[in-house]
Image (tube, rainbow, N blue to C red; front, side):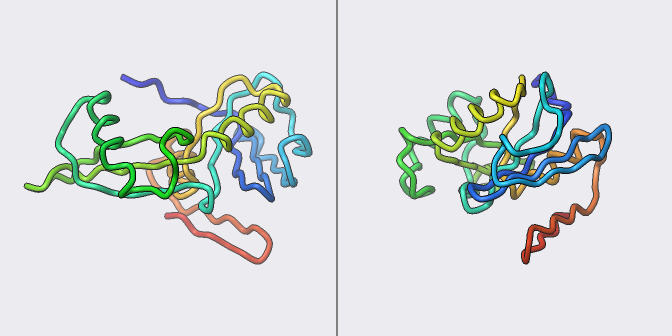
Length: 166
C-alpha cells in the first residue's frame, strides 16, 4: 500500500504565481516564485498543485491491469490523449471504481517534465525535502485528504480569478 504524504505546506504553482499555506499555522504567502515565498520551509514536506494551464487530464476506459501494464496501455494511446511528446512528459494514471463492459474509467494526468524539474529545483533551494505533485484540478481534494477531511469546499482567489473546488 502506498504511503500517504502528510505535507507541512501546500503550494499552488503556475509560471506567473506561487501561493503557499503552512498547514499547522494557517500562515499564507503569495509571490511570483518559490524563492520569494515568506514561509519557513526548510526540512518540510510539500504538496504542489500544478496550474490547470500546465496539466493535461483525460479519462479513458481501459481493462483492469497492474501498474506496469497500465503504463504500457497509456503509452499505446498517448498520441490520442495528449498534445505532448511522451518522452518529455511525466504522467500518472488512476483506475476508478467506475466499471462498464467497455472497461474501467481511468483518469490520466500529464505534465511537462521540464516543469517538474524546475519546481523541484526551486523547492530544493528552499530546503523542501519531500514533494508530491498533483494537477491543480485535483489539488484541493488532495489537500483535504492529507488533512483527513473527506469533503469540503476550497475557495481560491487569485487576483481577478476565483476557483471553487468541491
